Image 1 (tube, helix red, strand yellow):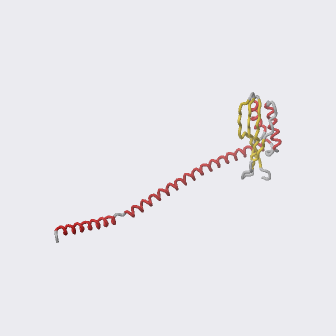
Image 2: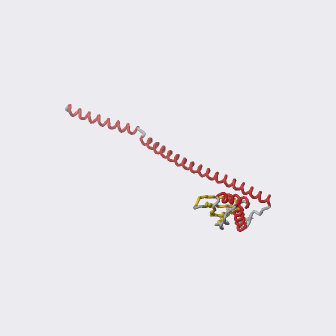
Image 3: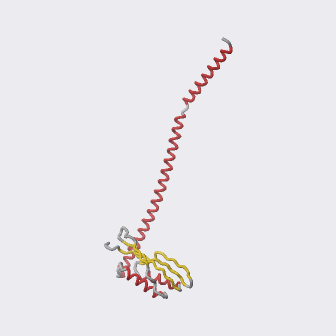
Length: 193
């Protein structure tokens, strides 16, 4: 054999051993385990983010429900206070709507409005769980005197037990003031005891 043939065989043998060594080295590297660990890590992060988002949403709902419960408790206290005042003064709590409108109209005359307040738009909400209904009276009144308009609102609330101002808007117009006010009153629903 020639020297050249030996050196080719040695080179082949060396390359074959290098290839086997690389395969053995690759077999010893835990690439599959590292990929699996990476996938599990990413899945864990996604689960953590979804759980955190769900928790934040639940906390927001809880906060909103607490505020609503506090509002209900406050309104219930107001209702009980109104009922106690009505019982102490001997005033009937559930009055006919026409009587309430008449008292509001009379308060306007006493307050010094130039003309009687027009008939309101009357709306009733659906009864709540306790059997109470909110009745709203929407007035749109114009008068030259802002003081008379405000006095009318104050007198109306003072004259009608349980009546309160739900919303009010005041705006100037040509030589007069425009007052849009919504009065509201809680009453027992028909048929509720």
